[in-house]
Length: 229
Ligand code: CTP
Ligand code: CA
Image (tube, rainbow, N blue to C red; front, side, top):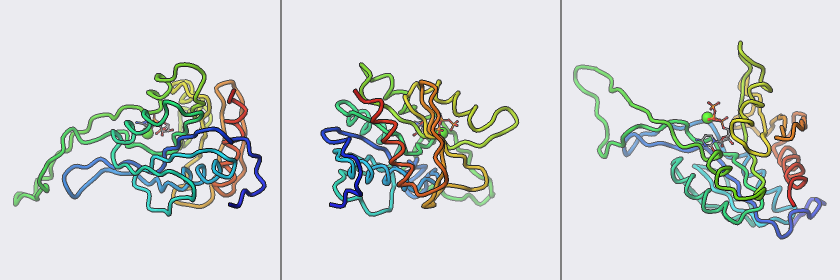
């Protein structure tokens, strides 16, 4: 295996990464989804393997080749992702929520395909909020292990900057690290390159210059390793 000359600082560690975007089906043929490709999650998996970790990826609708040496568990919905993450996190040393779970799902699933009606009246879709997996992972943790990492795609707005929104989110979620992507101007999604800031619950700030998702992945593992006991 090519180890890229990386430090073998994850040997004997088990890490769990979520990747991709969940889908919430309305009927047998239609779903609500999002633009997450799974590239960042898979890059994190490859980087962790290169550093010697045992790696599980819970992959929501990712159409990329599975990285070598990684146990990939496919899921579709947020509820499936939730169940697999909570199960896999039990004896993990680090958990990274790089996936984009759909925030809402249709209140009901219709067994038969929804048909157009002759009167041209569009159906109303009622949505309910999905559980917050990251918050549940933090709540389920008994001690300081596993180290828990969230991701956030943010845009600045009239009320706050990207970093201000991110700080508030980190506090709300209770995780150890939050990797923040500025997604103004169509950056990041489905691209090979990314740029980010890694915020720590301890107040730390690591800026990652624009570059491949692999480089950001290694920066994330650097921050995780520092927080492992
Ligand atoms: N996340 C999660 N479960 C959800 C939604 C989000 O675990 N139901 C995780 C994501 O995987 C990510 C982090 O929470 O690691 C932040 O996701 P984000 O969508 O930025 O946060 P939300 O709380 O959904 O806030 P927003 O309203 O900005 O979408
Ligand atoms: Ca969200």
